[in-house]
Length: 221
Image (cartoon, rainbow, N blue to C red; front, side, top):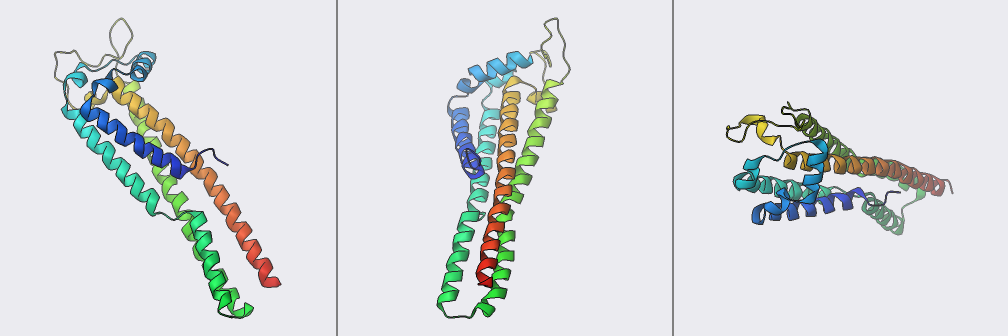
């Protein structure tokens, strides 16, 4: 049994994305100068890009992307059916069918059909979020690895990408401690979410097996 369900984790993550987006637009310095970014940057020996502290444009774009990601996650997690609601609806339908006076033989085949559909419906949530969480973990792991393994120079041993007076283009612009900290935190979060989703999948299989066993026992009576 997980401490927090994957649905709760994803909703809290979406809330965090909204809050982070607000700070990126209204007060980006509170993010760039935060203790977490400083500690991780110093530990990983990654410099802070001076351009990130003076330009508002990249933070605004990042805020829009974060809000978009949060909205998509909330829509997906809200629309996908949960096991509890599926089993509740299934039991309600079975009681309504039994109240109409159908015989046990007539009910046996529909129950098997409903159970087969229930299994597919109950596992689609876990399958989709297993793919999403796994894909995001791999992506942010690749970003973190790309930043950390960048070319280094200088006697201090810190990652020094390009001189301050030189214009930087392309992927070099993401090589800074702000992006690395965000990618690292996201990587750890989606690893946690992936672990919860896999644990919940095992619980789904167990509960569906118990439900099927209970129905088979009622059919034999």
